[in-house]
Length: 250
Ligand SMILES: [Zn+2]
Image 1 (cartoon, rainbow, N blue to C red):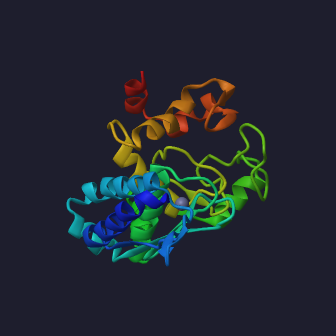
Image 2 (cartoon, protein in one colour):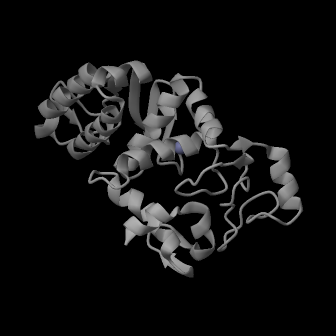
């Protein structure tokens, strides 16, 4: 935070608290004329606010957001390679680099799910006809039916564990998520589905990433995507694209 933005930042924090019951842990301070900039920037506070507003909008009103999430404390912390982490009433964003609007919505969706004892992701799993069965997943891997290694993904095209059930959790998604890999499970499916729902086909801060998530499957096998690397995209098109998406991508 730059010193001239101090007043703006304090007002933004107050507004987030009033409108959404979201409390940002300020790591900047202005004690006894000793300015500490912290890791947050003014632009990041705006990005946080705008992304929360996108999620609140699909719930209908701010009061519903506050009720569904039950108050959330947001802080920057060192969380290793993750961009964000979430539990009920708590969202952490990485101090390494900045965060994207997608990450904010994804993490707040987790926090929403967590506030309902992770029952929302269970409901999504059930509603879409999916299930979680680690034993069946292992059996499929042993039978050579998986697009991964036996106990982990492999770092090569067509081996990242994207097919239903080919992940650590043994999550057999029932519908077509926008993507899947070795760490996919029903909880990630819920958070990604919320972000896709908000961004897809709209013109908001999530829309270009939502489109990028699906456009990769229009690439040829072995092609490199600037965001997602190399994979056998064509082979996965039928797993992740429905014809309706594909048409609107052209
Ligand atoms: Zn997640």
